[in-house]
Amino acid sequence: MTTADEGIEYTELFRVIEEYAQGDHFHQVKALRLIADNFTPFGNLPREPTRNVVSDIFRRNNYLIWAGGRPSLVGLEAIVAVARWGDYIGWGLDLFLKVLDAAVHNRDTAVTKSGADPQPKWLVAAIVDDVSTVLRALESLGS
Figure: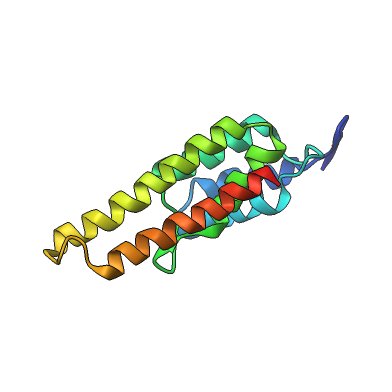
């Protein structure tokens, strides 16, 4: 590891994150977890490249990182960390909107393809739950 003027720069860790980000879904989630846990105001990870990694992972997954049938909190936590400590609030807000749009569209598409009732109660409840998960993460940007 090397020392930078603002603090410790975790170059080896960032190389691992980049490698995981290119892997399968499991490794991409690991990369997001490492970013969420290690992106701090002390400049531990490079700002712009880390933001690009998060953006790329979300883009490759159509803006949804799923875990247990819902948007994964680890992906949302990575967005919050980079947006807050990297001074990328606008980027974070834009990415949250894409995640919300994808969550609603994905659930709606799944119902349409199944031929089920287009407005079942479980679908509405699932969308509300997805939206509230993203809004809680978004709210943490302000704190």
